Image 1 (cartoon, rainbow, N blue to C red):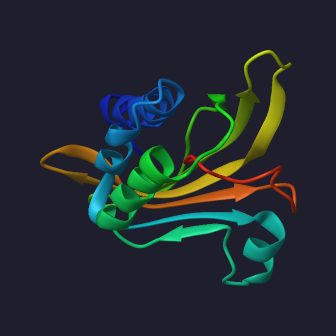
Image 2 (cartoon, rainbow, N blue to C red; image 1 turned 180 degrees about the vertical axis):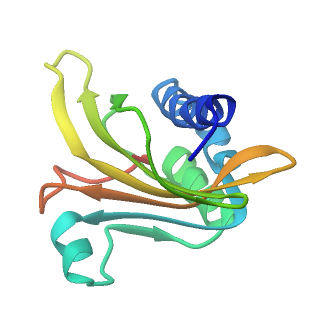
Length: 157
């Protein structure tokens, strides 16, 4: 379905995405997406039943930038670190410049002077487009397995 150089680029997209979030390089997050994009964080139950309710839902790169502004400049919360562990992407289909892929993820959270906890576990369901700037997410659904998110979801998954 994909030749190795393109699969390598897809793997780098997944890895670079997680690395930017783990390094708290929030300003880089919107650049992983096309201008017209969809980013949602939703429980598995809602996704499987076709319910539209999502914990987070954004429909453009501008909305992603607004979220980062809000998370870094207006929301006050206890500080914490995130660490993403992301499985290798599984390619579901390729049509021209469009790649459908998915990967399992686990996000761990560490607050200063506390033990690390599992924060969110699930899978990414993605539509990726190949363009002049390389691979970018057209759509990223973060489908988490639990029906609950501990405390509040501030930063991207």
